Amino acid sequence: MRVCLASTSPARLMLLRQAGIEPLTRAPQVDEEAVIAAVEEQEWRVLPPAEHVLLLARHKAADVVASLRADEPDFDGIVIGGDSMFAFGGEVLGKPYEPEIAAARWRAMRGGTGVLHSGHSVFRVRAGHEPAEAFAVAEASVTFAADITDDEIAAYVASGEPLHVAGAFTVDSLGGAFIERVEGDPSTVVGMSLSTLRRITGELGVSWTDLWNRDAGS
Image (cartoon, rainbow, N blue to C red; front, side, top):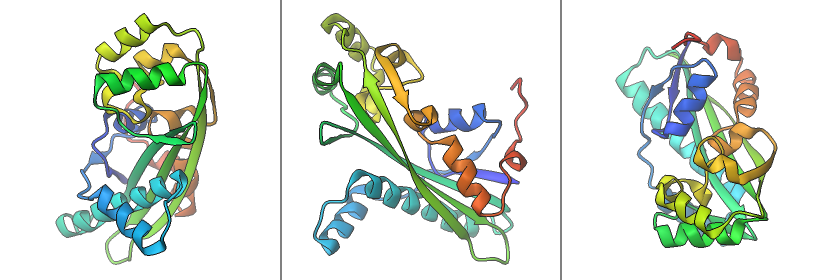
C-alpha cells in the first residue's frame, strides 16, 4: 500500500523513513493564515493550539488528496497531513526566522516547560471510493535545562537550526542536548506522533505494518 506525505518537512519525512516507510511527498497548496483567519472571523474567537493545528493538518491532507486523485486516479493508499505549534507561557511560538528572536526565546524558555501540539489527518484513498478520513491531535510537554548559558544559546542560534522550526528548537538534532525531559510520544516533538498515526490509520482499516516498504539498511 502506498503512502503520500502531504508535507515537504524534512523532519516528518525522516520520521516515516525511520519507521520503515518511504513515502511519496507532495507540498500542499494551503494559505495557512487565510484558513485560520476565516474560521476565527466566522466563529468570533481565537482558535486554541489544538484546534489550530488540527484544522491546518486536515486542510493540508485534503488538498493533497484532491491533487493526487486528479493526477493519479489509480492511487491506492493513504495520505498523511500534519501541522505543529509550540506553546510556552501562554504564548504560541512559531518559527522565529530572526536570530535575535530565537535567542530571546531560548533565554525565556530555559528552565521552563512548554507544550508541543501536533495535528494529524490521514485519508484512505482508492479508486472507486470516496476518501475516508481519520484525525487526531497529540501533545507532548518539553522541559528545557535551567543551566543553559548565554554562550550556548548564541552558538545554537548561530548554527541556524532553530530559525526555521516551531518553538525555535529540535529534539532530534543539536537542540536535543538542551532538553531535559519530554513527556508524551517523543516523535510528536519531531513533527508527528507515530503512535497517533498508527492508531488513526487503524481506524481506517489499514494495518501500520502493511505500510512498511523500506529496507532496514536503506
